[in-house]
Image 1 (cartoon, chains in turn green, brown):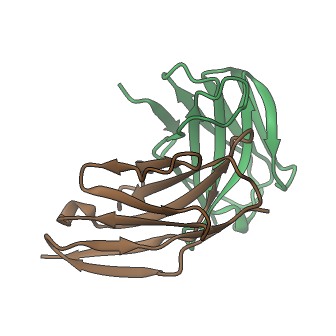
Image 2 (cartoon, each protein chain N blue to C red):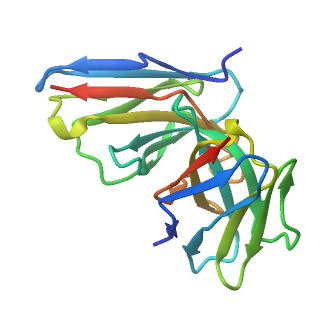
Length: 116
Length: 114
C-alpha cells in the first residue's frame, strides 16, 4: 500500500564508489522529484521528471544522473561519491498534468546516504 | 528567486495548548501554493495543510489551521490542542504555479511537553 517507496532506506559506502537509489510510486502520478536534505535539515530540489521527461535540473554536479524508465519510477545514480554527498535523499511525486505544478507532492521515506 | 523563511528554529508547547509557527516568503508571483509539512523522527515528510494563494479563506485541517496574509507574504501554522504526536520538524514550503518544485524553509523543531 506504500504510495512512494525508496530503496534502500540506508546506504553506507566509501568515497569514490558509484551507487543508485530507486524510487517507485503507485499513485498514478505523472511527475516525480528528487530532493536532498542536508545535515541541517535543509531541503532542496535536485531534479524533476514529468512523464519521463526532465523538466527541472537544478545546479547539481553532473555526477548525479536521474533516470526515469517509466513515469512510475525515478532512479538516482551517483558516480564518484564524495563526503559532501552524505545526506538524506527524498523522492516525491505529484499529479501535475503537464508540469503545471498544481498538486500536492507526496514524499517517500527518504534514503540516508553516508559516504565514508 | 523565491525564498521561504522560518524565523523560529525551535518552539515548545504544553500538551493541549495552542502554538503558532511562523513562515514568511518572498515572491513576485501572484499564483502560487503554500504548504506545511511535518517531519517526525521517522524522517517521513507528511503533508499537514496546503493553501492556494488565490483563496482568501484560510485552510483548516482538524486541529491545524493557517493564517495566510498574502499582502504581508506571511503563512503561519496554528496547532490547537497540541498532542505529543505533534512533536516534529515543521517545514513551510512555497510552490509557484507552473513550476513543480517546492522551496522549503529551514524548518522549526516543535517540542510538546506532557
